[in-house]
Each structure stands twice: as C-alpha cells, then as structure tokens.
Image (cartoon, helix red, strand yellow):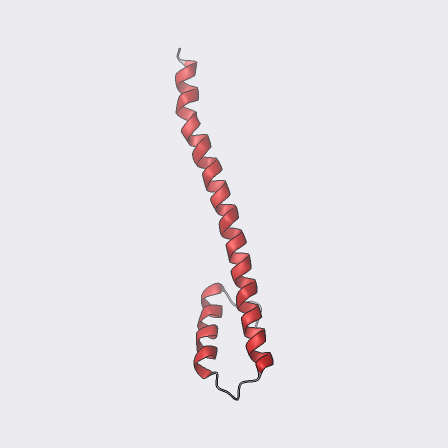
Length: 74
C-alpha cells in the first residue's frame, strides 16, 4: 500500500480490507492496516486541533477589532 494515499483513499482501502478479512487473514496484515489508519487519524486530529486554535485566535482578533476602532473615535 502506498503512503501517498489521501484520507478518503485510505478510508476506502480500510473498508475494502475489512470486507475482505476472514479467519485466514494474517494478523500482521491486520496490524499493519490498523497502524496506518491510527497514524493517519492521529495526524488528522493534530491538524484539526491546530486549525481550531488558529480559527479561535483569528476570531478573537476580529472580535476585538471593532472595540479598537471605537476606542480610536472617543
């Protein structure tokens, strides 16, 4: 499996893998798939948290902007 899969592709591969799994599927193959999915989830979660922090900082900055403008005109 390629490391260049995007999230949607990796999820699709995970679903296909789950459908194809049987009692004959080697545990090492299952472990590799679970590891790939977990690593991608960790990365996606970290990126989402960072974007949320940036959004909140920008919202706070924009919210304080009208107050700063009003103070200039006093």
